[in-house]
Image (tube, rainbow, N blue to C red):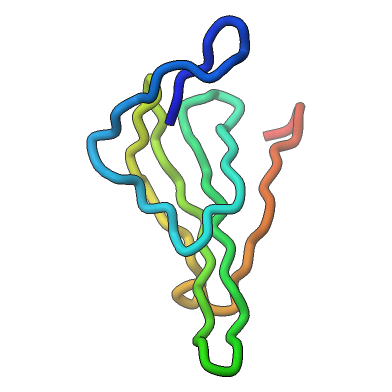
Length: 94
């Protein structure tokens, strides 16, 4: 996690209290419109010949002054068969 400077460039790194659980493959992160929650989309992978399926999940973090705290991990079926890719929020509806 890095701060964004007034110029829009990356600023200083924000130290985290603990290493955030980023799932198998972190694919996208979005903050909610209120900028107090961050949702990380962690995509899974289909099984291959000699490799089992990787589970997918949505990781919901509290977001406070650059510090993340895991609030919930959403992984239906333990994440198997769940391969989220993207998340978006409607600009005017809840």
